[in-house]
Length: 245
Ligand SMILES: C[S@@+](CC[C@H](N)C(=O)[O-])C[C@H]1O[C@@H](n2cnc3c(N)ncnc32)[C@H](O)[C@@H]1O
Image (cartoon, rainbow, N blue to C red; front, side):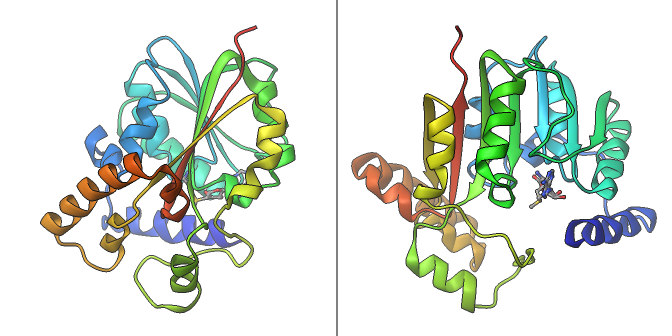
């Protein structure tokens, strides 16, 4: 499978010392513009039970553990589970890591106060995943996902046709669009969607810090004035809340 292959290549790079498992929170929280605001939506994690859903490399799991949560992380790929475990060790935190399918979770009902997921929902059947999320969340719990968004036809064309760095993906995955969220809306009474990187997506091809900051500032203003433009953004943060009663 694609992700096992990716994890094996990463494991090799750790063995040869080309990559580092230890990292500071800011390196994760600021690696994309949506990560920090999305993380804030999890609320205060101290003393909470948190789940890193489709954890991949496990950086989010480490950051949640350092924020004071008791963390469980899972991924379909055993290679990534091993990397997440290694990363937890290298950063001096304890995380329960397991291989599992996001559509059939091996956890008891009402196990988690907070669920984090990055670039995972768009791999899944959202009816099955949504039902499992509702089941494992505690009443009043929240699940926050950062997902590639596909509402912008120009971006869709670029994703399909143009060469640019970091485009590796599985053949079956595709960015989410509004109607893909219908199953989640049928399961969760409260679904919040926020778009990130409208003009700011220019950083995919031009990494100029000043230009990116100006674009991000423009995005904040534009998205506030015309909320409908969220649909044209590169990524969406999706928050699912389980009612408290
Ligand atoms: C794009 S990666 C994102 C990984 C990680 N969340 C991150 O932030 O980098 C997608 C991850 O989803 C995992 N995945 C794909 N299908 C899955 C499923 N049905 N259940 C659990 N994990 C799955 C892959 O193994 C991979 O680690």
